[in-house]
Image (cartoon, rainbow, N blue to C red; front, side, top):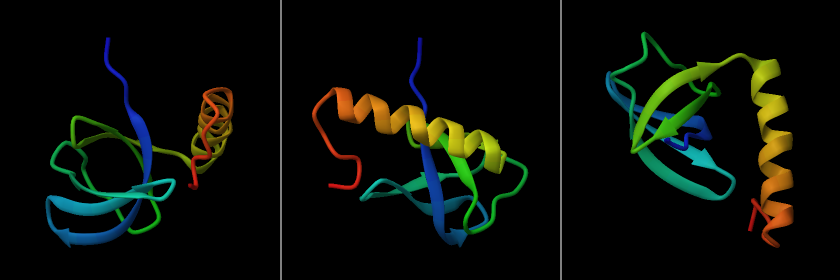
Length: 79
């Protein structure tokens, strides 16, 4: 089983790399596995690779679930 975390694309570094954020955590990710990404897209990231681009409605629903997970764990995603 793997865990993929939603990240929002903030900066495109080149054709295959981007800076993305999950909450307040910023990371460099690979985008090789996706046809295209643009700034503002939400993608699922596993092991440093964007593996799926989410539609806006999917992204909003998933964010609600992640907020609940962090709240349950006693952490604030934005902290």
